[in-house]
Length: 273
Ligand code: NDP
Image (tube, rainbow, N blue to C red):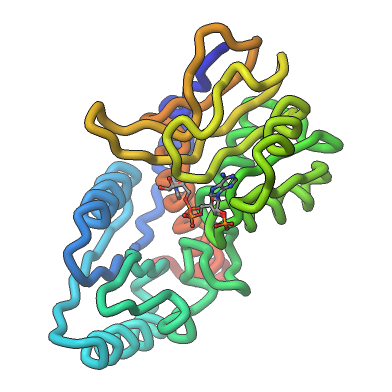
């Protein structure tokens, strides 16, 4: 069993972005007091600075749902037409049960660098990062069996779609998939992706020699952060992403890649600022 050095790969991507000398601008909108969101935003500010981008963070205060919705839609609407801003993200979750669906019509698809809109010009960062990682380490996807656990709109489903586009044979598992079937599929998988969010969801010894295993899960325990996969030293010869220091870093680097593309698309044939 060998861990994939996601840290080095994310760094390589960030260095490539920095070397373009582009000064793109990311606008991050948040509301509420979710501690995980605060940490994610801090990471995005840090990444943007590292690659030479500008990052504006606007935290919206509101007393109730209507007020917050009004502030969000007003801001998003203005940002659609703001040529100084290349990418806009709304950090989820939002308070007062406001969902992405409530605000998505005010986000422009060209600036949706998270790739959350159905007609976004980007794939969502996590699945996009996973596929770019596989390509980076020369994993052949064409004709391979890719088993994905988890069918969320931001990871499992879009990943299945991209893998199909890349000519993999895809099995998308979820909470109604019988465990026995999931284990049978896992044993056959050339590529296995776990995006469930359950510690010890599956043991690394379940995978066949040569399998590439991607652990998307982020689970916070008293011992610290861990993924979905139990690391068993008696596993076959597999490649696996670590947690922490794995898919999360690739997701963050992908966001910066998307921002670069958004900038380049907007400025193609135009004068740069
Ligand atoms: P969701 O909570 O939205 O979805 C979890 C999925 O797991 C659901 O589709 C659910 O099925 C499925 N599931 C639950 N139990 C089982 C089971 N026994 N067998 C198979 N599937 C099961 O999760 P997200 O996609 O948002 O996130 C998943 C994990 O990945 C979380 O730990 C999250 O923190 C992490 N994450 C990490 C990122 C990174 O950059 N590293 C980015 C995004 C997420 P059903 O649909 O039937 O309920």
